[in-house]
Image (cartoon, rainbow, N blue to C red; front, top):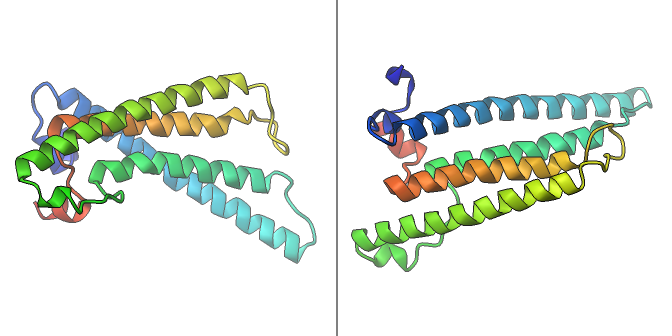
Amino acid sequence: MSRLLPPNLQQHQGRLRPMALTLHTLDTLAGWLIVALLGAMVAVVSLQVVLRYGLNSSIGFADELARLTFVWSIFLGIPLGIRIGSHIGIELLTARLPDVVQDALLRAMALAAAAMMVLVAWQSALMALDQWDELMISMDASAGWFLVAVGVGCAHSALHLIWIALTGKPKNTETAATE
C-alpha cells in the first residue's frame, strides 16, 4: 500500500499517517472528478456549438451545465495547487529572513489561511442550505450546487493548509519528482 503513495507521504509513518492517507485519497478523487467534469464540459459545449451552428438547434441547459462543471473544476483544483505550493505568493520580504523565521511565518500563515477556509466553507454551506429551494434557470437542480462546490473546495483546502502548518513548506512537482 505504501508503494502507491507519493514519496512525501511515504515518510509519514506516525500520527500524521492517517491525515496523509486521507489527503492522498481526497486529492486522487478530486483529480479524477476534475478530469470527468472538464470532459463533460468540453463535450456539452462542443455539442452545443455543433447543434447551434450546424443544425440551427441548441441544448437548453448547456450553458448552465458548463458553468456548473467549470465552477466545480476550479474549486476542486484549488487544494491541489495548495498541496504543491503553486499558488502565487509575494516573498519579497520573507525570502530575506532566516530559514527558521520563514518556516515559522509559513506555518502561522497556513494556519490562519486554514481558519479562513473553514469559515468560508461553513458560510457557503449555510448559504447553500438557505437557497437550496432556488432552482437553476434551465436545469431542474438547485442553484445551491454552486455554493456546495465552494464549501467542498474550501474544506479540502483547509486540510492541506493544516498539513502545511504541521509539516512545513510543500514541495512543488519539480522538486518532489527529483527526490
